[in-house]
Length: 221
Image (cartoon, rainbow, N blue to C red; front, side, top):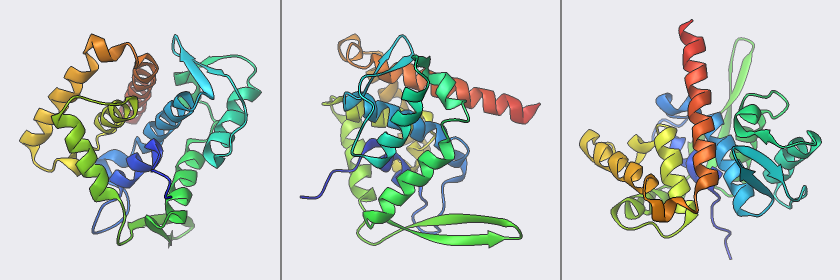
């Protein structure tokens, strides 16, 4: 049986431009932060970590998932719980490697192909969606989640990460539809009945927003 796509994989797939390949311009500047946050939530949902009062507490430091194992090794080496924002801004936890691992996973799953590019001394890998990729299914999943009551923490996390990562245009090209979807997502987040189970997600999203604001401020200075 085919393994379902992880939260990190769904986020990154929606960041790939359908025709031209590569990552969406508006989202690419902060995608590494969003992917790291998504990975923290995957670890929390797997029971490998707990996120309490904004700090990541390692509960078990081994995993069969390469991405999770890589992150857990870095988290556990610190020997003390640190805030989510600390890890988003710490060079010991390479956000570039996290993104590269998610890309590799999607390539292994035949969702994308990676083509090496070069300009002068710079090299990078450009991603292209492969035929039969699951992006249309993810788009449908997001639209269903927006139009009806949320059924799981993963759905809630996916919607929220797409909003904070500026990826809603991939699902809703029309500005008005996007505005309506964004309002519904924010309403979901303020629902006290659902909010009791999403404290960890809110801490991660808060840290991502702060990191994005920091990058924007640094770019303007």
